[in-house]
Length: 285
Ligand code: GLN
Image (cartoon, rainbow, N blue to C red; front, side, top):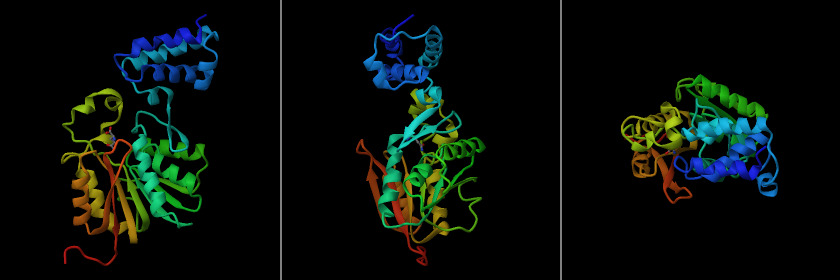
């Protein structure tokens, strides 16, 4: 039987596909053994059963052809949650936690609030907010039935009953409810962007990544429609690409938002742009 240390040597087979080869093999082995990474460190000489080894090698093959770790293990940590993920949605990204942080910051005094998460995917943003604020009512929508099912399943995993998941093409099925905050991480990558063919992104659904008009089409649609679904002084917060802050600021300005700001992610890129909606002010006047 192979030991833990011997199996971790397979990281060398991943070096050409992954810049986190050792972490990847550790995560795959932990997944097969149902152990934490500390176990691998503490017990490098532990013997791994043939069955576990075979399972590990099958998963390693999938990683060698580029499949993201999150799709192989079916899970990804986001905020304080371990979310189920699958190939029907985007893998939640650390930078998207910025939307959660900003929403909590803007609404820090609110014991109750109505929040809408458009294009929720796995449910990441909505469920993170719901886990922090049990008094908030959160609507999470997605146009893809598979995403709706996944978000429902993640909601059930954490019993976050203050979230309602529904199938909707952006605002189409939202009805006449108005919200204190609308958040969204819509598709915003330019269809011509070369990085769509590289790494994990190439396994993710195009519909969750790509938007026309240099990636701005969905951001623009949301900015234009959001006012009709916001309460007076409600906020719209949008994630966008590292080079889209100026364009998104212009979209919010044109749509009549005030107090427009951009927040930077941990890499220093403007990643989120937001603005406040004042009801009754018509920007066209
Ligand atoms: N941030 C993601 C990326 O650059 C894209 C997410 C999105 O389009 N909403 O890979």
